[in-house]
Amino acid sequence: MRVIARDAPIVVLTGAGISRESGLATFRDKDGIWAKVRLEDVATPEAFARDPARVHAFYNARRRQLRDPAVQPNAAHLALARLSQEWPGGVTVVTQNVDDLHDRAGTANLIHMHGELTKARCTACGAVMPWLEDLSLDTRCPACGATGTLRPHVVWFGEMPLAMDRIYAALDACALFVSIGTSGAVYPAAGFVAEVRGRARTLELNLEPSKGSQLFDEAIHGPATVLVPAFVARLLGPA
Ligand code: APR
Image (cartoon, rainbow, N blue to C red; front, top):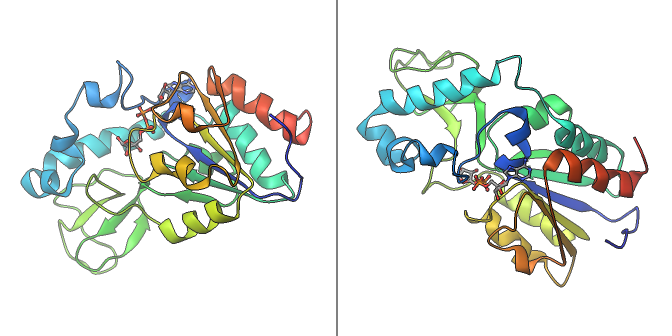
């Protein structure tokens, strides 16, 4: 990859693949989350209306896993955090992930377009608050006092992703778009490369070719903990 000008803005999109080597499952790999549970049963507004206890149990288990000491930001998260802090042209990291590993790595200018496992939202008063414990129908909203109205602050299928204006503004301004650890299966994130190609250089870093791999100027395949530190070192110099 031709190195870009140091004052050029960068947008990085990440998906579940960047957290795989931290011990968190992806969605569509053969051992992924959707191989074990149907998304229609746990990740849609209709599922939550139909069986809220089941949806809470699904997200409670994933939220608890984030508190496992074995689950830590990996070398890819840390390298990306360094790039976001040191790149003169500015870096916007747009993650589809709802885990908190980019946050814990110290990533600057981070957008969680699919929400965050470590936050809850009240469907009665709209308050969004940090939340590390289990949620249930007995949970009381600390903001308005209602009971049973809290849901994971996670974007479900059929719901609008968050901060899309901010994301498209960053895509419009960027000179380099890098996609890391995502299958390119879910829109609007899967459409970002088509949005910028021809105007910005595009690079895919993924274990295997994604669905949109042929849209990228360059695609390098391998584990994120190898590819991302090497990519950041090429831009910033060795750590
Ligand atoms: N390093 C780099 N890439 C990896 C690694 C790894 N160690 N392990 C897996 N991958 C790649 C896989 O090859 C795959 O292309 O990460 C990608 C993960 O794809 P998905 O499981 O589809 O996850 P993602 O693209 O993030 O899904 C997007 O779908 O279910 C919804 O809301 C959910 O945010 C999620 C969205």
